[in-house]
Image (tube, rainbow, N blue to C red; front, side, top):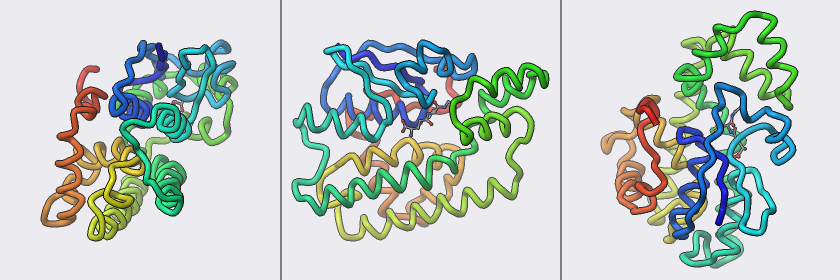
Length: 243
Ligand SMILES: N[C@@H](CCC(=O)N[C@@H](CS)C(=O)NCC(=O)O)C(=O)O
C-alpha cells in the first residue's frame, strides 16, 4: 500500500493524487498541516529535506518527493493506462510542460497563502517568526513564509501574476488548436501538471480568462478534464471548502 503525505488543497499533492487515481492505485492518507509547520519537523525533513508536501512512501518502504518526479515514477512502474506519449519527442515536450509549470507557474499562485497560512503566520510575534525561519530549509521558502507573515502580496504583484498566468492559458490554447491534449492526442502528465493551477485560475484568480469566449479550447479541455472519474476521485475540490 502506498502512503501519501499530502494536503487536500496543496497543488503538488493534487497532481500526485490525480496520477494515483488515473492508475487506480489506492493510498493511505497522512495529512500534513502546513499551518502547524508539520512539514518542517525533523522526522519529516529526514524523508523530504525540502520540507514541502507531497511525499510518497512506496509499498516497499522507500520514499519519493517532488510531485513531477513521483508522477513519472508511477507512470513507469504502473504503465496502464499510459500517461505519457509513446514517442521520445512527445515525452520531451511533456517534461518541458512539467518544468514550465514547476519553475514559472507554481510561484505565481500567491493567491493561496491568504486563505490559510497567512492567517496563522501574521499573528506570530517577531520571536516566533524568527524561530519558524530557522526550521524552513530553503531561502526561497523562508521568503514565502516571511511574505505570508509580514508583507502580504500587493495588488500590483497580484496583477502581474494574473498577467503571466494568462500567458500560460494562451500557450495552452495554441497547443490545443493542434491536439486533443496538451501534448499530442493522449492525456498525459503534462495535463496533470497544470490541473491544480488551472483549478485555482478558474475558481478565483482569472475566471474570466477561462471562459469559452476568451480561451475556447482551454475551456473545452477543462470541461473534459473535470469529467474524468479520476478528477473526482482525487478530490480536486474548491480551495475555500472546509476540507
Ligand atoms: N516542487 C515541489 C513543490 C512542493 C510544494 O511547494 N508544496 C507546498 C504545497 S503545494 C508546500 O508544501 N508548502 C509548504 C511550505 O512551503 O512550507 C513539488 O512539486 O513537489
